[in-house]
Image (cartoon, rainbow, N blue to C red; front, side, top):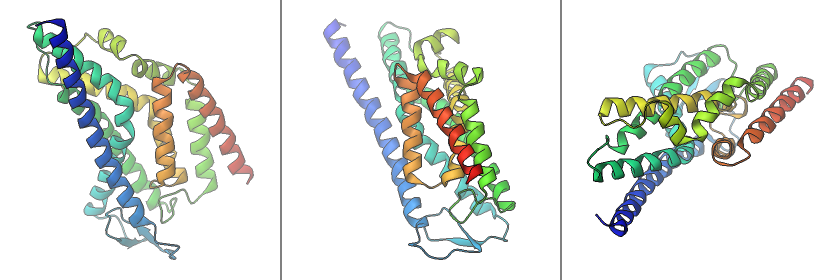
Length: 270
């Protein structure tokens, strides 16, 4: 295969992968916006009730325990929201995998399909979504969230903000962020590409786990501002993107941490 033909194939692969990721992100954001619109009841008094994220105007009395259906709906909400937020920042890694996989296939050393790597990555965030659902269930049992799934207690909000701010300065954050910032280094550190499906899935899961380790506490901020607060969902997604892809990413993380600590202190005083 000539160099020109190879580049044409790689460009085509890149377009296919970018289009697929774009569709996934667009569908996820459409679902989030649909749920958010459903939960905006136009100033309606929802005292004594909580919203169920079904997109159908469902509410349940605060004192009523969660049903299995409500738990599943909250879990789906978190999982889809995480996919929408993390797809842009995961795109460079997935695109690099697709390029090298195509080059390996042409050279007679085929790798597992790129979709398996992406599936492993998002599986890590699905696991986080399950944990977030359990935390939300516990908080609602303690009446710590209001009808729109935001903190009903300034002390709780302040604790989460300060914890998030401190975590942004920790060595754990730096270590996880370093793995997310340098895709090729991550691959070489962990044995390179995999030719088998299971190995590829595990590699994607490992990369996703580092991203969870990097960003989980930022996602916890949604419990402070409202789990379905679309503006904050977009801002957090942008912060994650800037942290991972810009040259000044470490300083961005530290500045965001300082802002969180300051905001937590202000909530206590207020």
